[in-house]
Image (cartoon, rainbow, N blue to C red; front, side, top):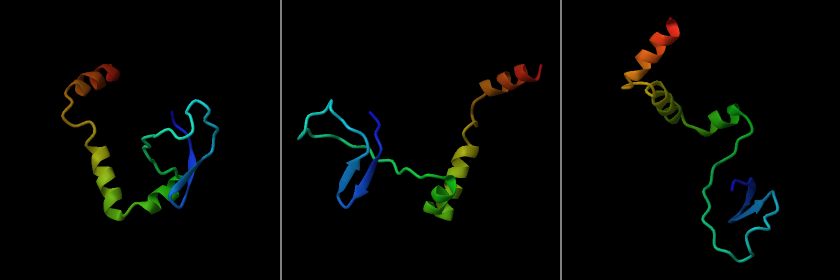
Length: 76
């Protein structure tokens, strides 16, 4: 289940009604910061963090020899 919420101090106010989970239930919550646009997202990362993400992206296809076959097939 994925639901947006707003953090207010130590509380998270959910933006949707959840009737399937009884009140008082213990939950495990995985948090992901939601940013409305990419400019805001870039401002949250330091220069080093942005560079690390770029390096990770650039290396995503390395060491995958089957890609050479796929691109060769596309080029035909």
